[in-house]
Amino acid sequence: MKPGIHPDYHPVVFQDRSTGEAFLTRSTATSQRTIEWTDGNTYPLVVLDVSSYSHPFWTGTRRVVDSAGQVEKFRRRYGHRGGRK
Image 1 (cartoon, one colour):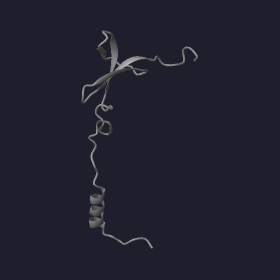
Image 2 (cartoon, helix red, strand yellow):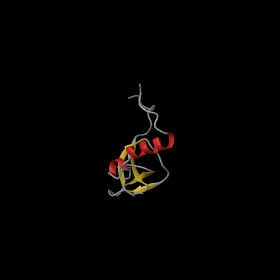
Image 3 (cartoon, helix red, strand yellow):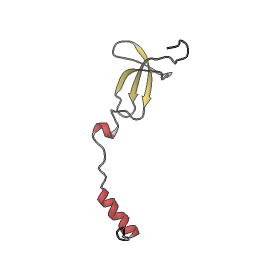
Image 4 (cartoon, helix red, strand yellow):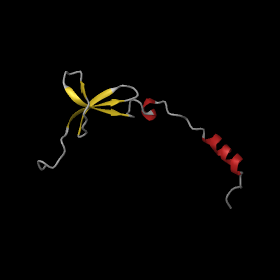
């Protein structure tokens, strides 16, 4: 890689705002906030609104959409016009 043209790639702690869970990884993200990690070092802290700790897909708490109910609601509202010819 050419020196001087890439952003600084350094350790950063990302913290989920809703669960408080945090993980240490490397990133080019910067922050004025810092946190002392379990290894005793201080790292920049980036707070996330959603991460794998709180996203419904990863936690298994996703909503089940009743598609049949939605279709019936649509048909009641707009009427059933019949099938294709």
